[in-house]
Image (cartoon, rainbow, N blue to C red; front, top):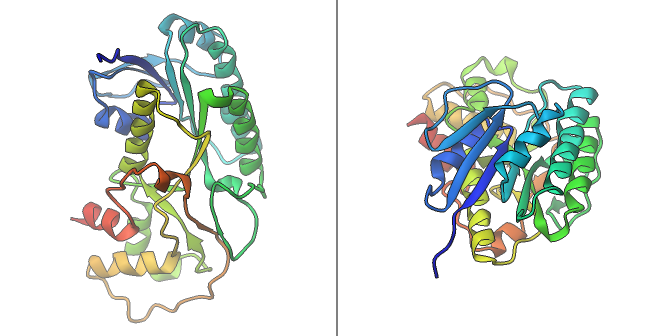
Length: 282
């Protein structure tokens, strides 16, 4: 059976969006992107300089007629206003546009594990209720509620800390004087940018073949790690001294694992931080 290609719009097309583009099959997906400022982009995506917060964004969405939308914006500052604008208001406008599309199939909303604000020693998954503890988590959860109005035509993707070739904060921190390291040795969770993008594509292909998709996935490598363990491991790989580093108390953070991602059969290329950072260092 011949499968017709689908139009995919990436709202907030930045690093994650371009990684989706890089790993997509152009025979299956015709890609469009929204960005407030046009950057150099791969030839396989048609970019539009559109701010999703502006009224005209709805008209541009209607003109493209996407069958899949990936909503992957990021707040431009750590403020209540920015989170409210980019996640809640922006997704509301996208939702309004979706209701005007005749052949719309699926929304993928890129959320964050910031929605898990509870303090617990348990390992949390998407089967646990999210309890935000700050304005960022609260805004993300509000946006998730907007996405849920589409019922089985929406999937929420709660991504843990994204890292990859252009996201080198931990490597830079490991290289710095350990006196600059965090005061607490908290738990941390991560997902390699390529694996996150590949999983989104994996789900988009399920949309094509009409296979079932859950309404929520926790997207993390499932190997929660103490932050100092990561920093010391990187520092050793960079052949820098670690013998005088004092470990602070383990305090804060959370441990996360995905139940539903594993059930899909999707295989991570970078199943823990050692695989991902080794590839970056090499």
